[in-house]
Length: 108
Image (cartoon, rainbow, N blue to C red; front, side):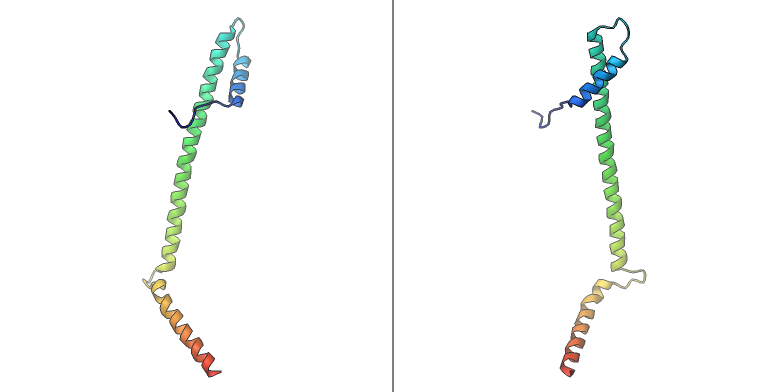
């Protein structure tokens, strides 16, 4: 059994019936109008399905672009153009700052 049922919302059904009645020709039977409404309803469902697929694809592309730009920014921060890596220098800088602070606190 499918996890999700392909149920149609009441709004879609009402809109399809409204469109079918608006395009109804003289002498057209109720059953013909009902078949036209079902066709319109299927068209609306297909449109919504395609819209969701395109929306998901666009979201994936946008996510990949954001990730790529974020990775580039991180790389620029970590490794500038001259090849000097800030991450490797950071522990030594903190060590020197702590020694300097300790020296200045003993001196006062």
